[in-house]
Image (cartoon, rainbow, N blue to C red; front, side):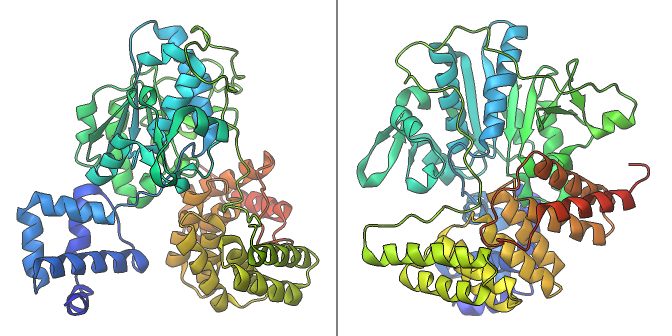
Length: 506
């Protein structure tokens, strides 16, 4: 029955339009649309519904079924302490400044699109680590449309993938081991966070009331530009002049709509209702003739009392981990895993010597011994390196099956799609890569190239400027699958040339 329903659904557009109208999610042609069709077909089969007309009518009259469908389609892949530079900016800089100027009373923080809760709990942990017992004044709200994700968040129990970038000391100090190799957030952290179902597109964010700080990170990538603007306006309405709104690193310039001031602090950007003296304001304020000074230095310790209570005696800041986009391979005690690790290391060494045929043979041996993420990515990268674009897609897809946030695998698929002329598919893959690793400058570059070719000068300019910023501050992290052919200096020159071509009124 599912196969029959799928055949009928592939000519349908109204299901995608209904979901987009309801919550803003956009289904681009390709894998996203196919996933929508499969989910709808599965629901039709579960209800014994034979035609799309019947199921569409059910969605229109039964809000509960529409919500169930949305929850099956939302992406809930996240982890603790993601993009730690921005968490450190909020906890170490913006909040202490706010407290020094705004006196007593609760401080409200909204994590918009919080999914299964890793971000609001990350904030709660860092606030307790920095302020000790005084952290009780912070009121954190996690908001999301997905009730199942919120149920997970409320319980606060997570498996290993959620801790892929968690410092072991933080794991030990703020989580309790449970059955099945999972960990639960400790009660003193959980009580700092409440969760609420909110549809950001329909204006539900207003129900949470005024917020002093808002994080809205890596959510809008699933929305159209129109929906992005609508949601950003609603969030901006919640923010006082003294507050701040932080979006994902790859999303910042796209939200510079003139609604809030874009402020730079030490190469990191956030939105503020009112820029303070000495801060750089965004491009729109510069064009309007606003004065912009140099970025203010990071302040010293906060006015609040030092850490107290039973909190673990840990360092203040989250370590910012290396960001290659995928986990590194570690040798297991088993012989096959050790052989795979040896083959992988040898393959990488051969690739760096430009001995690609030998490197590919060794990479294939590593995959055969242990088909884990990094050997698959290296194999795909070597196939790409030797011009075998179609063959590269298989191992790259397999790597994504193991690690959906593997930036390098998405990057390879984007380059392969671009090579065959599928710019739309390539752009989608480059955005996936940036979701997995916001500092993936090569994905940012290729996405900007596509926008430049389409004549979207503003977005292309923002992309090229982001690449330059990443490379100039040293964020040319190792691209394991591209050992030599992708020289950062060459890309800097190309970006500057493209910006020269686009000179004129911004």
